[in-house]
Image 1 (cartoon, helix red, strand yellow):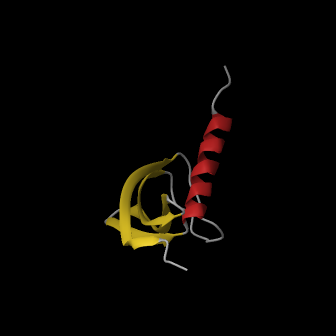
Image 2 (cartoon, rainbow, N blue to C red):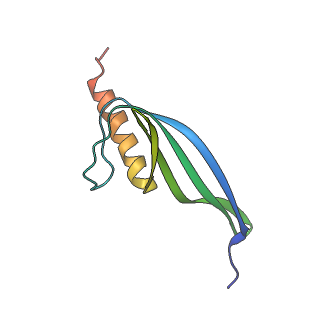
Length: 97
């Protein structure tokens, strides 16, 4: 079976994510404050059956601190769920028209 990864090229992306309230990631006990966070994602390009795509291989959450910041490797799906929970909570809190 051939390797579906195309010579292991990697794609790096950086985006800003805003949490409107404190949040947690998965079962970890840490509670992060509301605010803007930088998310750095590394993805690997793959190809199979004439199609190509990206597979997330690592995700870093850059956590601001009073003296700078620190990076924490996180599970991408846990971060996705935290973002979705924050958006759902914000929507539930917004006044109805």
